[in-house]
Length: 319
Image (cartoon, rainbow, N blue to C red; front, side):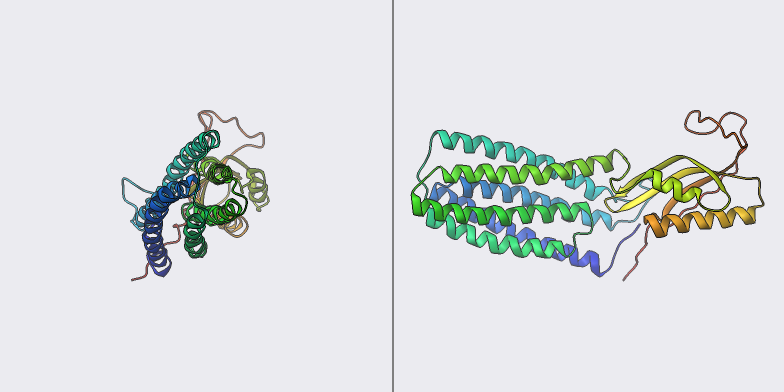
């Protein structure tokens, strides 16, 4: 699993640009937020700091994805990006809680803000975050980059809300708009992060992917000629968009040449209809009554004929 080529290099370039621009905007919103006495702008600074860390972890994850598998890491580093997304999402939920607490405190003890400075700074953020979100969307092919894209999209919406809030403060003089905007931003951060936590945690715990139905897979495999049953079926994710499958398949006592045909048909079915190309399939000869599963496999004395099918994980070598 050694990934190179234009797609990976383009992702790295986009992440480098995103890191540089996000860091510059963090400094801008922090200092001007202090000057304008705007909690919404300071919230944006904190939000963008978490996004900077998210982009940094995404960049590191893309780097690790490009490293080859070893005897110690036989699947390579496909889950580095998943782990980065999980850690970042947990951190963002913490940031959301802090912003909500500060916003409530500001509602109880309001401060006068400078709306024009607030709007001008947020306008820069809308343009920057919108461009970065669009760039990340073009390469958002896994949960790691998709998580970074969601953060940038959330930033674009929240900075647009800051502009609207600044205009409302300038027009009406209602200072409570600033902390209310902070609460809205906190909700956006929390909601976008929660879905990433659920998805990444399911991958890290090797749960069945949400878009996969074991019943449908079992039915499709059992429809292959020569297959009398499928059990001990497992499907899990190696990365955000790369699934693996392992199972036991019951067949009759047939010549090896015929079993190879069945194996080929099974892999074709899994690859074409479920986009699963990394499989480990074990054939077993069983009587018509079947058998009970003990310790996750066969009863003592049960005959078996293991046949393993491995499809390499889309090696892409471009030098």
